[in-house]
Length: 246
Image (cartoon, rainbow, N blue to C red):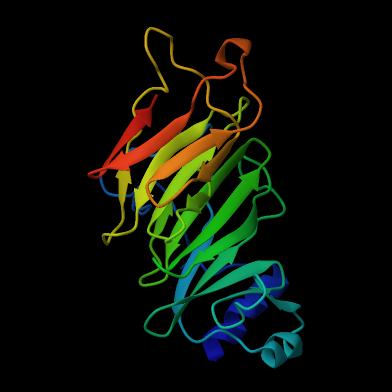
């Protein structure tokens, strides 16, 4: 409880103990066998893992902070206390994720968004954006490790595989690639260049990835180039590998 009071007091006063560390390439545990698509600016989110339980609404309000679940029904896992996100981690720990609204580094202010709780694989999905960037963290509820995956994953119907795809012409497309949650730690599945059917050049993928079943994904929406009109854009996972279907 004392550590919770200290942390909340630091938030209130706008100061942080020197023990707080920023995530960087040295501690950002990447997915096995996955080269995460690069972003223009690496945002250094301020985080701290502490041994304690999530604060209660009464305690947060007594300390002068607003309190709400990150999403409805997640009161026991992920909550906002003031403008900062608290995530429950196994073995009686909490990961504090701090917004930086005043922009004290080259990327400008950083603001976090809670995207999802993945109950099957037990990961939190948290995005952070600044003036010139947007990246996404996959945060392990078992140990608090943070993996930068570039964009939120869309899970297959059985929740065992996710596809990451964000078409963004300004900051560069992220994906597509798969994250296989059937093993732990999860592994990445690269997607070959395509779709390329016959002698045609690879088409530009449409905006929206939609799972057909637990092994196939279809890309839907308006074609991004006129020459891609009518081209089939469908991926399939076969024996742990991604293949384009023509």
